[in-house]
Length: 371
Image (cartoon, rainbow, N blue to C red; front, side):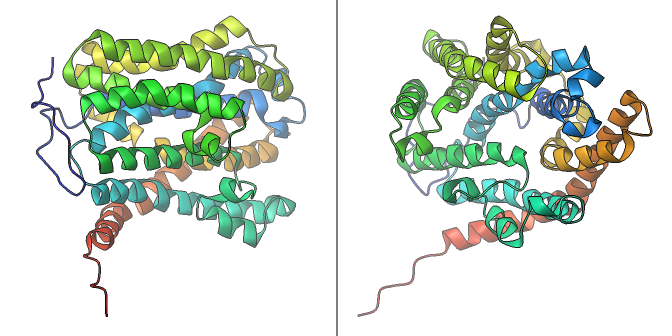
């Protein structure tokens, strides 16, 4: 059990000592990369239309398995619930906002530029300068502008979750408040979505709220030890996640692929999103301290951002000339190479300066009002 100081609210703007927790769970880094790899496999072997025939006909076995990896974004959301709450605990609003801006935008802008440049040459009807400009804000879904790359939809979900976490930080983070929030937010979010109660449905994230909230509750188990309340919140959110996602994903996969997914397996995959995070954080696996997990985990975000357009382009280019698996390996290799480039030449050098600059701006005292 990891001990923590007595619970108390963290006033807005204050930065009290953090709980006594280790600085990193490398197993979470590895799990993040596996989730990204799952998205890549799903897109390339079950959905990509560039094979000349449906992707599932090229990969009848691998594609059948990969359709269940379409739930990898939900796994990302559970991980985010865990990690974002961890990084926000004991920090001020400027700290949290600066951390998230520096984490999400530089790599996103680099990937957006790479993808837009590719599409301008390969598929010019798919992108316009105005569309790219709006996408650069990451608010395109809010104003009804199409994503330059379809994978960007998850970033809009992440941004809304960050906003909710910032609101919690401003009020003051305590175990009781987080548990209450993680228990009440998801049913309210799904109710708002079912009733089409805008703008609340958009703000509260609808069917994806249970995944973030379940990750938050798992963080409390990891931080404070096993107790029935956080586990009840995790279980309740897993049930809501199955109810909100599994049936809809079944219909989507039937429409988008040549496969007929199993609803029980989809439900099991939803529960598995919570189970995998619990496995790598609450069992002896959490002690696996191999630095290679962090190294590959660092490629997760850029790989997710660049893989679809560049991978599909590679498939389109090579599929007529190479075997299915040789083409698949080439598409994966191109995606990983671009991810390394974005990480090494954008994320690593810019993260610290951007974070400090944003924090400096947000922490600057307001100018006194003039008479």
